[in-house]
Length: 453
Ligand code: OOG
Ligand code: NI
Image (cartoon, rainbow, N blue to C red):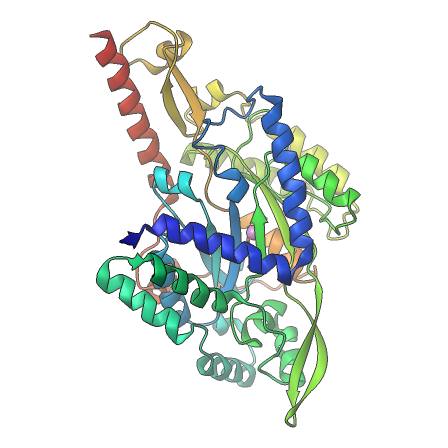
């Protein structure tokens, strides 16, 4: 009996959550806040969010995303194979060089509607671009340090190979697999470079130091999904968590779109540098807390509107790291985004967002969607956005890297290079949403018109 990839993913996500709770106790507080807020929203029972009962609501209590940063193409390729055992495929390509962050990234996540409903666990996975270290000696040293490390246990590699050969894992092997793979994500306070090298890497970029100086790609945050991020953010502040000043992404709306995120700042952690057979104490900011609210996935047309409105806002005002202009920023964001239609029907009819179709009480038949919706013969509910936003991600990176202003521009990254490192292409997220909407529409129309015939 093999366990399904979704079952393995659910077990892994739960194990990761348990590990992170002991590593970062504030994460436990965050999960409690989110659970309370979600329960209150679901109790309100007006379903203003138009969630599909069961499919959209059951997964919420277990829903998390994590993030890791890898050092070499080989690490990325192996990580892709490990995630594939759990039914997680690389979706989307994120070029963070635009924000002076020296990585490019993808999101590993389940892609099917059923798999997402079962457990939507995702990991934002970045690959360091070592070529961006200008100092050649330091670059060589970083490359040599990365080449020496082994981030996967032998057991994790053996079980991944077994899953590939046998097309799955038994329940017993899956349990061992989860335990072995968890080791890759564990935090290790022992640096594998000396103090001086660490400082040099920090000067090149804090992110480079975070990737190169440690034994493995420690999970740097694990994010629960809330149904009301403003309520959760207020509660974070009330409980004394050092929350970011603004929520990244679109403003608060009646019909949430894409993704809104907020974080609490990175923790200062005690680390140790090797020195003459002993250890020397040091400090590093590596891990932080984040929460997110997910809304409807946008079509390319909707996304273009989102990107252009956000660009208008950011041309006028950029959120200051110290939060001093947070109110003005939010006011501007709301003002500019008034141009983005804010009813499910408008988003649907104008082709701005993706929807699932259901059968309603109305009597009409045919295939004209607006009239079927007007008649109540069909219903719509949003297809949830399962991916990430590069501008928001850059904001999250920057806030947890210490907020230093960086004006140096960086060479654009290359998707082809990333895919070559990964060993396979990344899936286009729009194609996934489009296919999901088309399948749902076809099934609903068939059911509607068959029952009428
Ligand atoms: C990843 C930051 C991106 C998000 O939610 O946008 C991210 C990182 O800091 O490694 O997780
Ligand atoms: Ni995140």
